[in-house]
Length: 246
Image 1 (cartoon, rainbow, N blue to C red):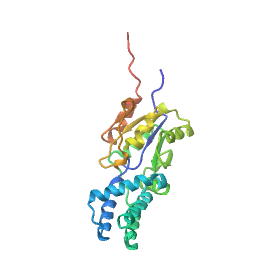
Image 2 (cartoon, rainbow, N blue to C red; image 1 turned 45 degrees about the vertical axis):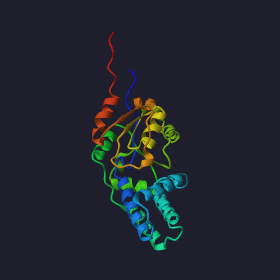
Image 3 (cartoon, rainbow, N blue to C red; image 1 turned 30 degrees about the horizontal axis):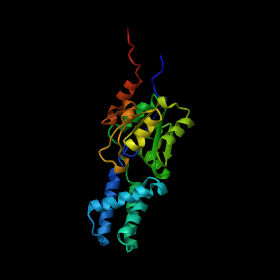
Image 4 (cartoon, helix red, strand yellow; image 1 turned 135 degrees about the horizontal axis):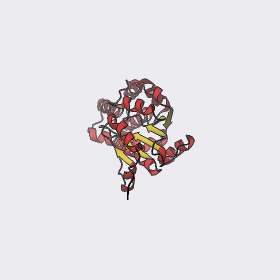
């Protein structure tokens, strides 16, 4: 009988293992206050639309992460004030970014047990996107670093990126499992290459990470409400299929 286990289990970091999006939400609200003090008379929704559009447009230039976010906020402030924004206001944006880069890391319920339990029986990898320095700092401060055999900080999460990672680590796609909160980044690119993925949706997530799930992807993806249930699901996925008797 063919083995059904996984040779490598990978976790996303932001909003899978630790809280992240709520920090961006707080920063956006502080940015709105900065704009109001600079005389920008727009609604919260209008400002959000401008910020989102700028962020998405800038992904190809800056990638993901706080530094990219801060540059997009500065660009938005310049655009919405017609270039009249003051240096002090831009300084406020920079201070917000610095606070985001140094804030305390808070794990989701069940994250520590899920990672350490999986690490006791499988090679475990962190695959996260964003700024290398910030992401490695988060991992260090999370207390989870000793559990990870490998860490991959990438600029984008595409099927090609995942395939390249598996090739470097000599892992066949059908022996790989990815755990994450983003359909666009953690789930669909993984099932596209023939691997399996567990979707753990977060209460807060960036709208850009949402995606429609094609019917063909559903047989290789599974959904959990919490990481607290991960160990049981992985055990079930690795259990041999019951034999059929004629």
